[in-house]
Image 1 (cartoon, rainbow, N blue to C red):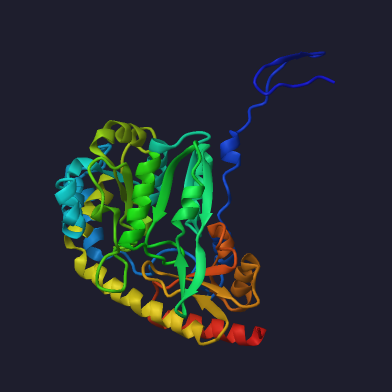
Image 2 (tube, rainbow, N blue to C red; image 1 turned 90 degrees about the horizontal axis):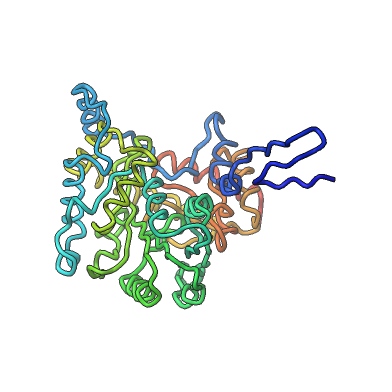
Length: 417
């Protein structure tokens, strides 16, 4: 029998055999999203309350849309700066100085527009960052449960995601998630290139303390690792201050990349715009990676993003207040059933909870669509440690959340326990 080799033509009885064109193994191995699976399953259901997707139900505010529309009327429909228009990069630098300036600027120096690179959302920023620090066969550590796109982006790149499960425990009678730094250290191998740190976390709401961040930074320094800091939910906290950040403790020589997006703070998920913060020495490499992926973000969306940074604080605080009310409605309402186990999230806008008697959360998510008309994301989508949980987004209209709680409580009572 003739053996076919994948990378060379062969001779057969009928003459030369042409090799078959195949997709790359990395593209075929890209994992399917467990969140999207349930989203598609529930799409079009009459009256379904969708709590599975990570976005607010607020429409992008008019002052942001007006800036985009004015840009279109002004004819800004041509190729643009790969790294972002100067006005937006300057606005990002000013925004970061207002919210993260101290003590960063004492140790590293003033924020500069040249360290910020505009991307098509946080996902694009993640892809650019990973291409900077990891390649085929390299290992990247991910504390889990975690946003599934970390795993997916690494798999497509040919790198190896290494999950490091966090602990769900009770401390002084309070449920919480705990990051075991010793477990992370034990997972480092000669192939490890990077550690991803998402705080506040999607999906758990875990928010690192400054001591947690210091330990992780010291670990990265000791092993020569990059830190990829996803601090997208950093200002979505419930104690009137932003979450601790690596900006608070880093030094000029530290190897840290930061992911950010306009999606969450200003209800701009569909506009697809974010930014990557990187050392200025990497600017040529970042701009090349943008050129070879998107060639830059459409200028009208960049004008919209500039307006969000410069005029968006009242909207942000109004939305944050609404999110805080949603957290209380969802957590307190479900907790009273006696069948829910969850840590009250310190940041973000998700409740990540386990349901007594329901270990198969993929099946549970499908049943809740069918039987309660509520959409949730299954914990199986978020990696090791998350399998027994479901994620519910509480960045929703309070009355809608009250109705979701009513439906879920009825379902839980009907199913017993």
